[in-house]
Amino acid sequence: MAAALRYAANGWPVFWLGRTKRPVALCGPCDAARKARTPHDPQACPCLTCHGFYAASTDPDRIAAMLAAVPRGLLAIRTGTASGLVVIDIDPAHGGTASLEALISRGLTPPTRYVRTGSGGLHLYYRHPGGIRIPSDQGIRLGPGIDVKADGGYVVAPPSRHPVTGRPYTWADKGARIEEAAPALVSACLTEIRRHPPQHAGHATPPRSGGAASYPDRLMDALAARIHQAPNGRRRVTLFGCARGAARMVAAGQMTSTQAYDRLVAACDAAGWPWAKSTPNAIREGFAAEGVTL
Image (cartoon, rainbow, N blue to C red; front, side, top):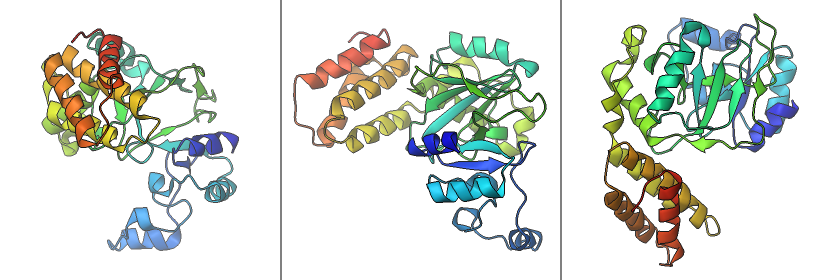
């Protein structure tokens, strides 16, 4: 319960799975509606534990009621825009270690906060860029043993114990922070889902290295939206983070540093930010943090 409340305080909706990492069975009326092929909106369903991650909540009272209903279940976090999380799931038993090395070499998985799973794998936590939908589970494969958990997905969360090994899921680096998802990673995910629609997910193959060059305008639009939404007192740190995201696109060859700089400045102007010396400085510092010069 303490862990669930901490996640909820971060804005991460949580819910409980059964002991086999599967969602809790539907209640009688919801199951009857499913069988009659007259299902209702799962997001609007008031039932406490029905419909898997749609039951996830940040309400402490509802969370307590879920735990009372499923006292021996596994704690899980809903991923995607609902929580602002994209989680890269690494399964060594299916080649995930070698695939992760390939992703690192391509700049898709920069260091971030992560979890050691009960099966000996890893969950790399990143901030969702917002403004776009990043499908998860069967629709996206970045390599053998690599899954993306984002919109339409969930992850088992610490301190749950793996139902087979009995080992707990644990945060491996409590002092680290969750970094934003690299634009190249987001682009690769979107490219892969376009190449391999969900119904053919079982035959998906890893994207080519050139796949990261897709959707730069959409990613820049997401960064501009973040700038527009930044409150007073958080503008500079927001711009610094957005500059880092834009710099990764520059490093991936998606645009020039001048183009990225101009787009960020235009976003600040459109948001009505008063011009100040700190604006170009924040952009330059964000670029420098990613090894990009203006």
